[in-house]
Picture 1 (cartoon, protein in one colour):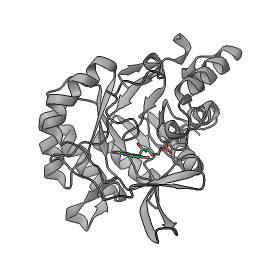
Picture 2: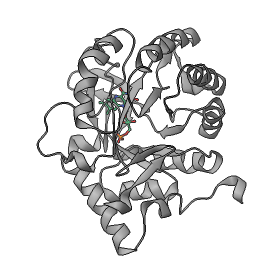
Picture 3: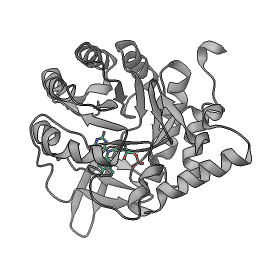
Length: 302
Ligand SMILES: Cc1cc2nc3c(=O)[nH]c(=O)nc-3n(C[C@H](O)[C@H](O)[C@H](O)COP(=O)(O)O)c2cc1C
């Protein structure tokens, strides 16, 4: 469907639907009910330098209108990933975004040195991971750290960089501007929102990241604010469970949208979002590119 085509800088996507990091595994499991043609790009679960076991159970907890996860970046490490997983992902997806995280700058660079040899569409920097050199503060919770890590990585590779930012900041615009200045090619918004649940049955606290429909207004606000101040494209993520949610993200400025925990509660979500957008554009005789940011304005154009 031509009208659904979109661009993230130089990356051309047949549809704006991106499977967001951590919610679709490595995309290699055979899932019969998924129409892979409707997916514009696939983002891997975040890969670290060394393999990580992740946190002990419980790791996922259902909450009102969403869920809290504390998976703890469980993954097989970059060496295993490149050798054994990436070749399988290639068979399924044209556009692959590899999500990575390091505990400090050095670790980010070590991963980049390995990943940059691979043919992939983009590297997504999970900047919501804790920086062990800054008392576990997330990289993207500070505009200077954001600038520094992205500019160092930019020097290492020509592969487009996606800066995935956390909404847990005072001013998301400031962080996004630093990411753009440092050389990020795309911004993805948002990662999970910090949250806490109490499991009264087991008398346990689940302290983690909130996702699902309850965070959509937070995601929309972040995309809305950031669109005004940056020139690079934005991937809108957070709480998309049906077609109209995706449309809302596009209208406030997202060039593509990420589907995450919505897939956990609705196995047909990819078809629904695709069909909704296709019908909407057809009915109004529009192309997706015409409606990006339709309900928003760039600050410098005002
Ligand atoms: C189970 C689970 C695992 C996730 N793992 C990652 C991850 O490895 N890296 C990352 O950048 N984001 C991760 N996320 C965050 C999602 O990519 C997404 O940004 C967030 O869930 C908000 O979107 P949603 O409300 O559509 O789920 C994870 C989310 C969930 C629910």
